[in-house]
Length: 221
View (cartoon, rainbow, N blue to C red):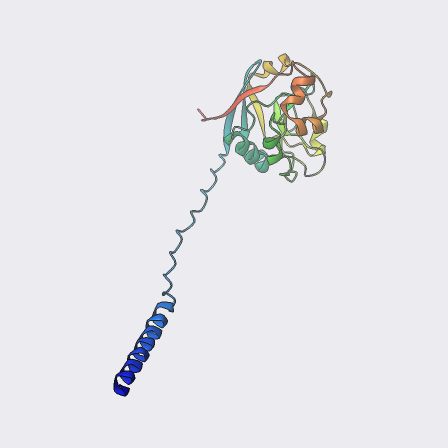
């Protein structure tokens, strides 16, 4: 009787030890898997080199004109104009400043989002190598080093602008007659309001304003 009870106790103890061992094995944390190596991040493509000379054709509500740009005249301006043309920024832009005998100006977009992308990207001034004579093209500015995306075509001999930081980077080579056809609101537009509200401001207060309908880079002949 005593022997049978002893064996029973030993059996129970052995089972308890075995359970503890199995429980210990089960509680061990699984080995961590090796983390996957992320694929290399592709570098953005290099920007297209700006040619020494290039042309751009502008279609408008009154006809077409072509601008030829010479990079050596004002390299920063020539590059900025090229980048704006690459992304078709000027398509749809109202021709908001028309002063007969003086200038025609555009460059604020109908879309405040598009305008704001460039409106704080200021360019330093550049030396004036070509006078602001009839047909030449310059970036507009509101002071020193303030050029962004607005451009104007000189409708007359505006040489006094040469000493004010306006550096022509190209000239109109065809379609100069188109500028005389644009609806003139002179300087009536509130540029700050136009930048904030976009095309809705123009449609509300200046419904006859002409527009750039498309602008594209051309291959030189």
